[in-house]
Image (cartoon, rainbow, N blue to C red):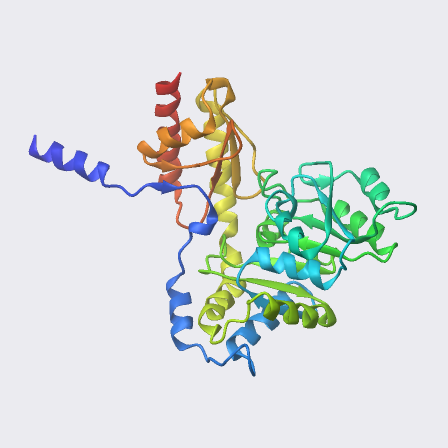
Length: 356
């Protein structure tokens, strides 16, 4: 009996499986080692050498001329917009894009307008995009077209390269630059079986987040033509984004860019395993089939909303994020192993039976 109690106690003490986001990833030991030995300088004055190295390495990985290290991918997207547009112009982007759904509040001080274009799996309808790019008459001038891959709200969908090429060609023919919210571009590249620069070739500027699946503690890089990056650097200072001896964080970013992309296929495999298991588990649970590391779970048939499911799952040892009223989002990352997937499926099964 004592042995049984010890076993039950050990099971209760297992840490929760955190599937809320790949932003929960902690730095690797190699990152800590690089952070401890990073050469430092004042990035707001004469430059931080490690930050400068990260900017060059990331720009090269994305096939761009220059890079800029910034605190977040939200700031990177904002800087790309500010550096390539003027007030009273418009940014055209897919209607469920993160830049539209979660970041367009920046328009309150940029003076820009956002024009959402309906799409499928994150890909804009090209006919609607062509119409939006027509600037005659009373229409606002389009300053920038933005794409997103992998696409967060489309369950991590990867834009087909043919679509990206068509968007870039359509915009370029009218002299309009294209920005790519590539927060998870390394995931997109992994899913396509190619290097990130082959994805980023279909845009003028690209933002890369370092603190998601790549596991750095913070930061992002904006990459593009040197003139755009130079202008973005000035805007970064205006926004309070200059960060002094930031090489401590940039060192982790170097490890993220140079090493961590190589393991993302593991996250994708586990996301697919989670999806397959959930779709076989219970008729009231339906999971999207992921291309990358994001699974959305529709719980509408259960008659309970996502918030109820999220609370019940957390009691069962799994953290999943409500995504709209009747969905959950589950994101795999390097802290999730095969055993965690099995535990998560079991928790979903228990909750499904409890809430039925």
